[in-house]
Image (tube, rainbow, N blue to C red; front, side, top):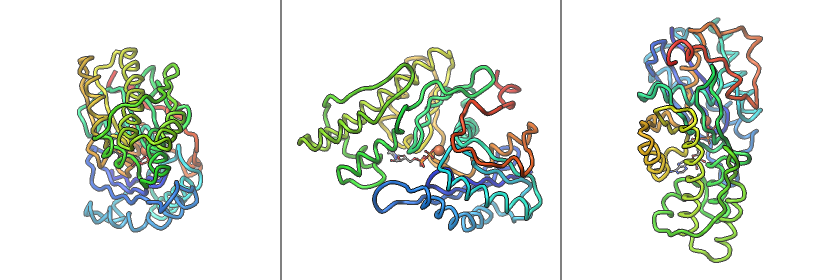
Amino acid sequence: MICIGIEGTAEKTGVGIVDSEGNLLASQGNPLIPENGGIHPREAAEHHAANIIPLMKAALEESGLELKDMDMVAFSRGPGLGPALRTVATAARSLALSLDVPIVGVNHCIGHVEIGRLTTRAKDPVTLYVSGGNSQVIAFDANRYRVFGETLDIAIGNCLDQFSRSVGLGHPGGPKVEKLAKGGSYIKLPYTVKGMDLSFSGLLTAAIRKYEAGAAIEDVCYSLQETAFSMLVEVTERALAHSKKREVMLCGGVAANTRLREMLKVMADEHYAEFHMPPMKYCGDNGAMIAWMGQLMHKHGLVGGLEDTGVIQRYRTDEVDVPWRRSSAE
Ligand code: ATP
Ligand code: FE2
């Protein structure tokens, strides 16, 4: 059984091919890099429309397979930008119809967790998923993946990107802020954890104001990272203590950050928990995670028909039935 997966919840198009054993046969992706400003949903959709077919060809070539070898199509059903999701869903439906194979829409956030479990030794981790569009602490509990904590406003990646654009460093902000932070020292910025949830918008505004008021860019970058990452680590730590799990996993594009990894690993070590992170290729958005989700859903009889392929812009992590977790880990 071979599944081809198409990812396109935000600005990155991805196509992956995975077999039923979890062998990652191909993963090809292409991000839209905006010249200035953020990502417009229509531009993301146009980017997917232009890239899905070339990426499919590249993924087939990488896997050494042909289109006729695909036994199933999976696509990212949500959460994400409406126009982007609809473009991907349309492409997936057309492909499934033309190949006459089953199709399934999958949850993007759970895709991150499952490709992480597949590519690391983590069995039942508390996952910190941090990207441009998401900041969530996820763990399996009472038969579902539960969101233990999340951002109440913007995601951490978006916070770093907006800061970077506002001070003229360009996009994407994460790597630029990380580099400059190395030479900085601490200035006080607002630290906002509300219960198990996080807020980054006040921190973003305060960081921009500090810079405008004349603080050194290195100091602002350092303090922005230290503050935001401490907030993320605090919430992950509390989820770990509450759930009594033994593993911490980091994923999403912001996992590229060495300082965040270091802070999270120190916290995990203090709790005698293992720290895991998938290879960077599978940390950010990718088609392989969608194809692997398709395989898991197929194995557990969750593949419906074409009528069940509508997109869900605000697809909640805890809405999804994950029978493969019930039968294995617990
Ligand atoms: P999603 O759809 O899951 O929200 P995304 O579209 O944001 O994903 P990703 O590739 O997962 O795509 O993440 C991109 C984000 O990662 C950007 O906000 C970028 O600034 C951030 N990022 C990349 N490298 C680093 C880094 N070294 N430090 C911090 N952030 C980083
Ligand atoms: Fe993602």
